[in-house]
Image: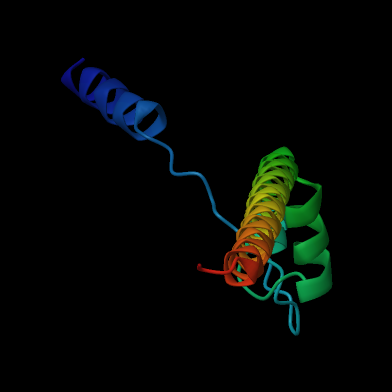
Length: 127
């Protein structure tokens, strides 16, 4: 009876113990493929895409497009400011020119008055 009990315990330990699964790795000669998917990692890693494709991706991004629009708006605003400044300068120059002409006319009139006044004073005779 002791032998049967001892044999039963021994058999239960052997058959009910942890079974280690056999791990078989298939080694492929000449294959460098990883056992997991590397598409996402490879497509965005440095040097994985050509410079032209990477540039096209950056150009097509919304953030890049928004920055281009902002730059274009700044350029338009600068042109408008430059045009306004140029118009102000032209107006100031024109006004200055008109003032110079007015002063020149005023000087001519004064000169003409003085020339007219001097001969009339010389023509009078003193008794």
